[in-house]
Figure 1 (tube, helix red, strand yellow):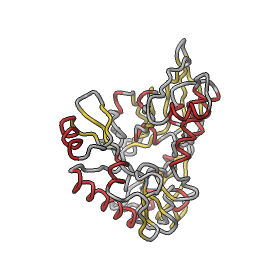
Figure 2 (figure 1 turned 135 degrees about the horizontal axis):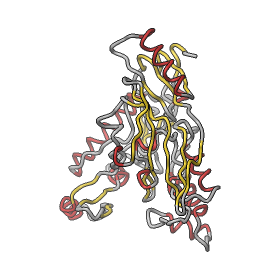
Figure 3 (figure 1 turned 135 degrees about the vertical axis):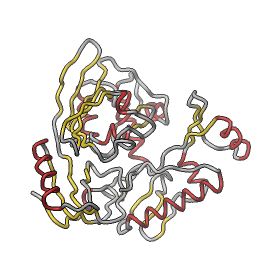
Length: 341
């Protein structure tokens, strides 16, 4: 059922109250096709386009949305095949990401444990190439199926087709707004390969008193760490990390370290160094900053928050001010990780 002038406040984790001209959910390809036909017949506005909404956890609305907003609610988790080393899980794009991770943990399927408690739905995982604590989606990705909005056909994408990069994929670049991701198939390990070297995982495991390393223990460690420094969107509106960690040439990093000895960087072993954007933002005095209800979270400077009644434009302006200050002090241009339609 298509609803008109529908509030999207409950459908984005920033809690921004904007209106969709038309709104509907779909849980099958047939429903999606019917709704696209509705758009063509009823709206027919060249200025509007179909907007696909997933979990709303990586988006900042700054204005009302013209046209049709479609919420992807395709569900299902299915083992489509397995071999001696791997299990392949085909998962509906509308499934909650963390619930999928817990499914894998409970079934002793390894590879996603470092990605615990990331907000959002499955469909966004390849689009963003989501990642945390040394693991990215590309490490467990097998293939996906997506519906081409203009050609009205299903296309299969293998790993190389997706052109994964740091929080990037072909669906954020050259194919942006052309496809609806229907399902994603992941390749999970039967025998785990533990990754505990990133961040504070090893320290948290020691605090937990873990004697024998398991995917369950790593998942709980990640959940503990994230819960301690990341705000719950149900309490304080946010979209997780607002900015990407910038990658710069090693030579530029050495020059910066000469001027700023405490600067935080991680060697990527490809001639580049990844900087901690949160550290840069904190050094410029933004951590804990608040103007009206838009702010920079006091426990993690990488996160911008809505304390209640901030508009998307107010949060966007704050992000622009932060970007300018980092550029002026360090000569580095921060990029937003959050999508702004």
